[in-house]
Image (cartoon, rainbow, N blue to C red; front, side, top):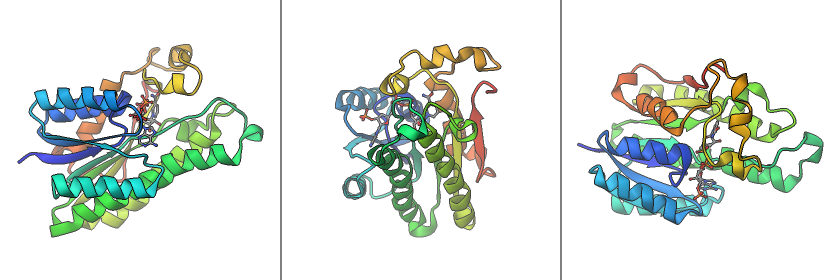
Length: 246
Ligand code: NAP
């Protein structure tokens, strides 16, 4: 039987690559996005062509009411949820901590941390139903380890929160057949760098990577699909670095 997977932020980048790959691996898909409807439609079409049943859900994960509405749609369409990729995330313009505003910090933590926790909470409630279990992959960042000084320390701290959340949640759920892991991408070629005001950021920093190159969204998707799969049946509470060694 095909498993039902929710990917947040599935309209672009790593989320889109993950959804496309999952469709080829016997998952039906809930594709969440915030603003890029055309992007979500394109991914849905590719997923349907690969045999997946798809549901597109617009919801800003920084808004709890919109998360609730998304889960009502999921319940109505599928009546179950087996897997979650907690991927939606944002960066902001490069700035020093002394330049941060309260509004900037609220947005960063509402989307990257509180949103991810609430999305996971609702997923867990559905995985617990009937004791069937499931798997969650939270998308962190190498920034959690590097700190991102002078760029976005707030973003790095939000991703460190995701890693701690992964450890705690995985321990809470380890006896309930629900595995929780995180993936830490490094410098990956997606539009997130342009959204942070520096389209060439990944290329500029490629020389700092031991492998001397940036990574692709598809390479991150492969790691995510591994952690979701039964091949990772004894893996929980882990952080998988997909950074070319950086
Ligand atoms: P991306 O290309 O900018 O895609 C981000 C996705 O998240 C889009 O689908 C976007 O949807 C969605 N999103 C943003 N805010 C949202 C919100 N409030 N509610 C729902 N969806 C929202 O970024 P990416 O590079 O693929 O990043 C995906 C994840 O990987 C993020 O958590 C990011 O922090 C992490 N990451 C990326 C890199 C990298 O180098 N690319 C490195 C480390 C970690 P809309 O466009 O529809 O709004």
